[in-house]
Length: 166
Image (tube, rainbow, N blue to C red; front, side):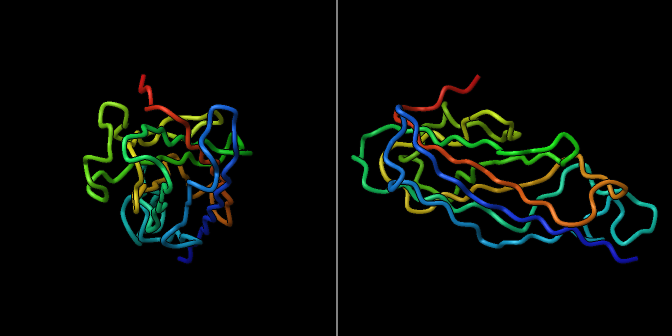
């Protein structure tokens, strides 16, 4: 059985009136594209098996926030651009072990979130952050519908003030 799905991630950083300067936010990915294969099936390498309900991906977004005052609070937000209804959803979770906890406002950082077509808080920070890893996973993929290449365009925003997590 040969099963291969390539996922590409593209980051876009835009400015809003209440956002900080775009030059202060840098996003890279550890690996692009990401390949989903037979190993990601519910029962790996088994014909007739469907994808696992949650597939942790072998890539992470690496976030750098620079040139801020050491006491300036901010909120990193993200959302998907151009997501079609039948595309598997993307879930993000900030890896709190990748930053100094004095740089995190934990009450404003969700454990994980599913990206939508509107901005959602990913991480609430204070001052500069050299390297915050944001783990990505996909949910809801089905072998019968999701084979081939998929492009996910994630828009990231850095907004002044901490995140408000519902």
